[in-house]
Length: 239
Image 1 (spheres, rainbow, N blue to C red):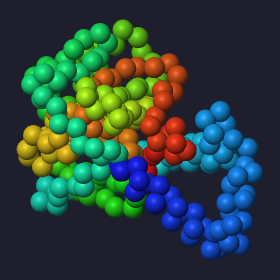
Image 2: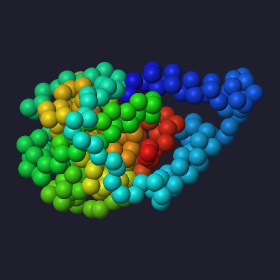
Image 3: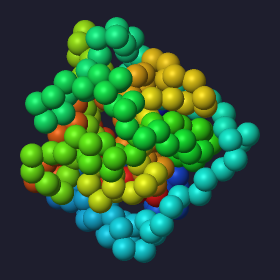
Image 4: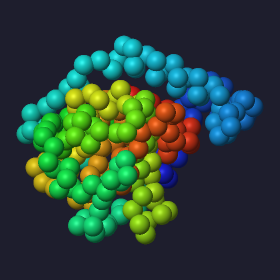
């Protein structure tokens, strides 16, 4: 997601709220007085996020997300939060539990194809066909040394340090059958614009969690840091 577009969208949201609540100036003044947590985000926002997460995990996020016929698939936007990294796909490796896995290693896993909807917090969505391996199959084939509740996924391509990206996700979500480590989109290998050679597809979470160009996966006992949660967004980011 483009950071500048996100800032503009948040400003638009604040403005629309202000129209129904006494003016933009009053809203800004109120925002500035709110108690904040250690990261500088108003605690009220964190509490709202926690309530939304509890609802999503207990009521809304059950079963499979809707799947579509392959004929409905389109190419989604290139919504990298910064520039589009282009790397040497032949030398790319996934750092996992002290192992350096190649794409060929990952392709030994059973391949799953599904056509699901990618939804963005900016308000747009796109139906896309993805192919890859279930995250659950990845864990079975390359088992971790210890089982933890959370997963950190990072995109840290060498030479693109200004655009590094990271997400934290609960393991429960990643064990759902539609959570894929994908290497193909709409019948073709991923392009750099869409996260080549490997990206996460997790349909019941917003696009901000569907990290592209994954370079590292690690398990964590505590909630790992998350790029947009660090900037005040919902950590869970469930639909």
